[in-house]
Image (cartoon, rainbow, N blue to C red):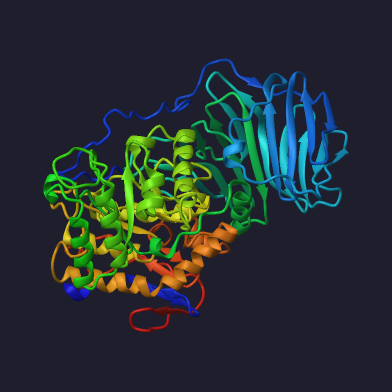
Length: 610
């Protein structure tokens, strides 16, 4: 059994290494019964009267980078940010509004842009410059947009932009061989062809939920779309010939990105040019995080106990990067029976003690961080976790809160931001790690997490994770299997205090599990330069460290579809193929269904060539 547990499948290619609702455990607790899912508008259709934009009545240049189109009283502003990036912004009745750009959009149009209009009998061709190979075509009667690259159509509207009482919708044609990815963290899913995904803060962490949605998707046809909005919505790819894209607001504001077909890297670079590059984590952020509440009855109401946990990591020869010392409702830092204490003497002592042991200190909050300046500048806290009890409202409120925490770290220290959060949105990738939420450890949990992380990279969510073996439930075998594959991701964390077996440290189940966990955490530690380099690449280009097979092998169409060889394995950068084990040993000792794209592959464990 021990030998079988020690390996997950890991291979290498020409020096590359191949290395449903979630089941609830008996100890599961609904920590947020007051949070209700938002309405999923238009799920069964909306019978309210619809208004569709009409024919073009006027068109003119508006500055060097923009073109304004009138359709009666409705107006559309087309702005070229680069040759390959164009914004289409619709104002029903001619009144433009923009509640989003100041927060999410970080770029301005390039100074070399000189927008150009060419008229034909039926349409106008709009370009960033007269020589541009990217053309936005606007048909006249009615106004329908399409985008072309070097004469090849990337997308085309099948109906004019439309609004009803709840949403503004865009309908794009869909090719039979076209696949769609993105939408942020969509639990259990990565390839969306034939499916409908929600873009919302749904306050759910299960398979099928969307705990960190992003209003962005990309297509194998060579385009991506970012809806510049805080409003929830849906992207419906179920139609065989069209895709319906809607957000629950009366405005329409979208950025379109053009690239060669299947050039996902170029589309991610364009998307992160507009919404910001993924944040660059500090080195300690790539190590194991340990989260618990120490000022509680289980630990004798004594935050100093965190020092003994750090000592045990050292004694057990298990590497750790950082500790969250107050992760629990009503948990502060101090010693004694006071509820929710804020004892800076204790905090200073614990932070200094952890620092001496080579461990960085973090704090959790469900209510905000009113003492952050003192905690960061005075005590030396460097990590933060924002709880859904604080930011669960999502959208702009959650984004602004996480941005405030990032500033609190960077403005009061020489450290880089390192934050864990949920209910992320477009742009949250430049602020924080996004994790899957409060789940129960099981093989089903492992199974659906893999495609979740495979899919997040298509929205530039570079640093993602889930609690090792969940915060509820779990078992010795699921703990090992979950930890094994997360050692090939940039970020990972354990969270104690909620499961029936409350401690989630790597030694909690004893041998042989402790030794296996140690082996993998040491392997992760040895790969720190590799994952730090991948993090820098993500920071510079938007290309994530954890990559779908389709992202690393875009010319292989087999990687686009949902199957074991695409959804249940991933590339950790360009050199490691990781195939997690998500079935128990009692069922099988073999991880099957592994797909190796063309090339020479090396088994990491025994050196065999494939």
